[in-house]
Image (spheres, rainbow, N blue to C red):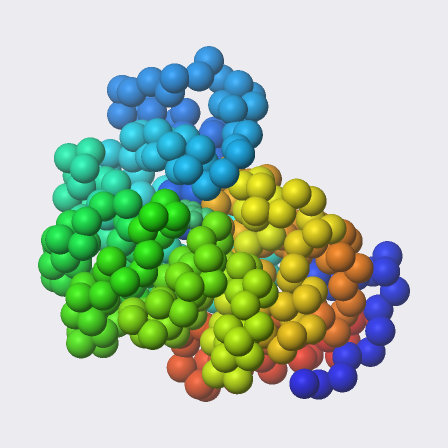
Length: 346
Ligand code: ADE
Ligand code: ZN
């Protein structure tokens, strides 16, 4: 890895904000800010069960993943039209571009919305149109990853996959999200095999709250290329050796881990130890509207809490491009822009 010149601690937050980066773990439904939630509810003749934005934000206190997922699911009820999905995705892309995100791979699911009576095309077309407009108007590159909900059955995941196939060209990959404990990756072995046969890139949440065994089976049974979260890997030295040797990327989300009490404080987060162990870790926001920060907040707060340096910043941003599903020439172009920012930063 390139040696980066030291940066004084007062200037580090500015470097973190300004450095080019990719975001690889962000659920678009988790970017729905309370203000937009109220606006969409009004547009669709619905009500939000809180008196105002401030009261809704005050409700964003969680003890674990499931408590969050229940609130997050309630928030998706305001999404009814293709334009709603467009507006939500556009708002995220404007925010990400301001954070110097050059490329983002956006998670979404269709099962939540089809269970509310919407069809998959409303979801996918709205999100895709926002991504296309953002490329043109904001210069940010964006692609879409369809996540299956793991608390539902494999049969239902197959249905979601079949419904998405007419829009195959608008999707880069398939992921696995929602309640982890009790729903191991191997529950989805057959549907991931089918997605692989269809040439989708594959990722899965594993080792967020769940044990290292779930990371092993995401790799060996689902054959995913990246692990989302993966912070529990450090409990298993043999797994750490494998992840480092095979250079399997981990899309880590520090503020999410803090809000969902995976770690009691950010100072106890294991991101620094992951890098020390040679893991290909990246920094991401997961559900920024709920967890108190977009990607730059994840970088700045985590660096402050852990005492990480400009060398770590370069490593993480470099990893984010290396771990993305863009082609080799685009990766190189983004990494060249990263080097330029580090070389010219004062
Ligand atoms: N869906 C949205 N955010 C999630 C998370 N952190 N883990 C699992 N599923 C999710
Ligand atoms: Zn996630």
